Every structure is written in C-alpha cells, then in structure tokens.
Image (cartoon, rainbow over all chains, first blue to last red; front, side, top):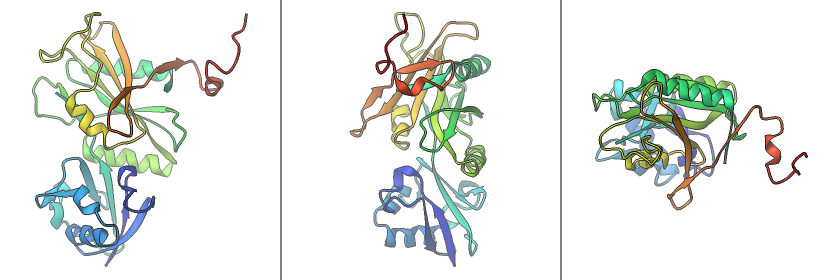
Length: 91
Length: 168
C-alpha cells in the first residue's frame, strides 16, 4: 500500500528538498510513521500528543482528514496525502 | 519588499471593507518562485472562536481546492492577506487606525510559510481610511517589515528605484 505525499515548503528540509515522496501504509498514522522512518523528524512536525498538530492541514485524496477520522483515516493504495500549512491569525 | 499592483491592493481593501467588522482573509497567487502576486483569491473566514470576528482562519477544504487549482497552473501563494478591524484589545495608532502589525497568533502561523508575504489592511469601518503593511519572518523567526511598493503594472518594477536615473 503506497501513497504519494505532497510536502509543504516548511517541511522540505526533512525530505532533501523533495516536493513529493512515497510512503507506505493503509492509515494516515502508518503513512506518517513510514514517512518518519525515511525522513526523520517529520512526524514531530505533524503530530503532537497523538493528534494532528493544529498548524497543519492534512488531506487524503481530496478530503481534510479532520472530517475523516484524523490519524485513523484510511489511505487507499495509490492514494495521495497532501500536507498544507494551516493559515490563521488574530488575537 | 512586496511589489504589488494597485488593482490588487484595491481588491484587498474592498474585501476588508465588505467583511467589516469581521476580519477578511485571502491570498494572492502568482507564478511559482516569481514573488509576483497576479490574482487575488478571497477566502472564507472559518474562524468561529470569537463572535466579534477578530480572528481569521482559512476554511481548510476551500484552501485545498485553491491549492489544487494553483498547483495545476504552476502558481503558488505569494501573499497571505487579512484585515485588522477595531477590537478593544487592539491598540490604535496615531492615525486612529487599528495597528496593522502581526499579533502573537499571527506570528505563530507566519512561521509555517517561509518566504510568503503577510499583508495586513487595517480599517475602523467600511468607509474609513486604511493602512496597508506587509511583514515577513527572517531566518531567526523575527518579524521584519516588508516595504510595500504599489505599482501600476509589473513591466518595469523589477529594475528597482535605485537602478535607473529618474527622468527629468
């Protein structure tokens, strides 16, 4: 089960500048673990205390995983995982 | 420095006025690595933490749709825009406008997008004057003001003011 993961600029230091990398896994959790095995440190940028960090949005195919089970979201074979920086402010 | 076409500035200000007193937000897209904003995409402010609307957050699904379209067109986000409206906690400047300066929360999120300009339009009402400023984070994560140069078009703007003698 292989997915293509799109990496935002801020995290490309972990992927040697690559915009897209492959990762294995059938859930988002597994994909992130595999990503971290090949690109150490990336998991800490995405996950805190067992949940997705509020600074990132993660999409499996076209859906925001916050509406699709979070880290338990299913990742289909040949699926795409897109990581984008959350955009917010105020206060 | 942020070099930006006047018509795009007018779009940002119009959006800020339209959404007042809620904060307006959006992004300016341009060709990849050009640092040149070409079109404005207003975004839905999905923040509901504060009934006064003094925070902003891009709607995540809409953000993805814009990202996908932009990627297909070899475009990227050049500028993230939001407005500052008058809320009690925000100091007013000598001009009587809310401060067009990033808040602590703004700065936290700016750190996620290195190289992207963060433009703020401050207004006190739908018909008030406005202040436009832009900011970047430097490599140390400190906020630096990003001088805004408003131009009619981009044709000659790349030369920079100091490179060519003024016409007499």
